Image 1: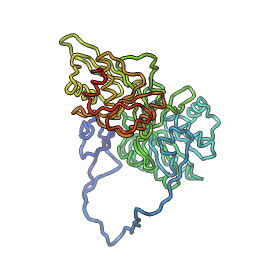
Image 2 (image 1 turned 90 degrees about the vertical axis):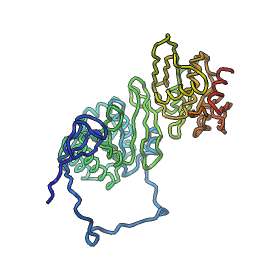
Image 3 (image 1 turned 120 degrees about the horizontal axis):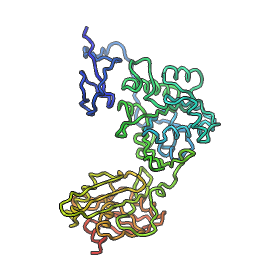
Image 4 (image 1 turned 180 degrees about the vertical axis):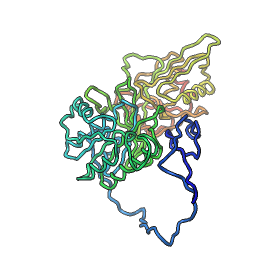
Length: 455
């Protein structure tokens, strides 16, 4: 009989190695390889014997009629938007975010709303005592909500308790990194424990039709801690984002088997908990009482929701020989370097003797490539010290050739800007619909700069 081989599992990324090393070869983290005592690797010795064992599985066609999954709307519109309409029975949802960002608060508010409608809701905390959860509920004005609380970390105990009677409609586990399965050796939070605990809880949810919500810790770079397979096991992955210095919070759908991805829900943190923000643009637009150079409004798009944000730029000329600085908040620094290079090479503008600072107001982070034209407009306005029109928005993608390319959902962006009182749009020439705005189209970044500088 072949001798079982040891394996070492990285606690950061879940990769498996046959021998221990100080640094993980896949993710590069140090001192994260731990021997996995719960599993062994044996050589592949024989093929499956197709004459014995196994069973025939049923194959169905793509055109088979199926019933749409039933959803439980939480009554929190922004959360339901990110989920695609609410929690699905028998589904597993993973929500991650920085400590103190409001994950537990949001889930407690959702659990209380569902329980107040007569649904059975269980909230299991592995990080806080039940009294601590009750105190938070009282601060949020939810002290009378019929939510069943428990403080436990043993998956066996949790499933035994929930399996005695009718399964709850919603089960919240806060957090999955604190859960422990006695089927696997190892401390809570290790790769094998997180994988095993999540697997047992998801199996229970699928069999009993319970909507399961797992709270996950995140690493220093913002990704969910534990094995990457955890995100593959669940049906929906939600990322809760925001800065503690700002009141807003964004709930972003990263993965959703029952709805669209890249949808967001916007919340504002207040003393009574998280409140919904029906008009996110009001959070990210500053008061524009007077025209200031280096600012322009950009209609960003998050899923199907347009959000207007203000792009701010500042250029400071330096003495000869000094090294200029480039600082970016809320946008990709590599993208800024590209826009600066195109402005210099294609438009004849010089930023080499200037420090450049770029900021997205309100702490919002823009990932939409349509922000290229707005950033270029803010940079040109700051360099020339010429304010942009207060009633204008700008959007469009800029190529290395200097071409201004069209972007998706231009009409939707324009309609949202028109609702907030803007009158004109600086956009690609190929933009067909203006959505109620006066459209100024440009084929190249050079023509756009000439228009801004009045050449």
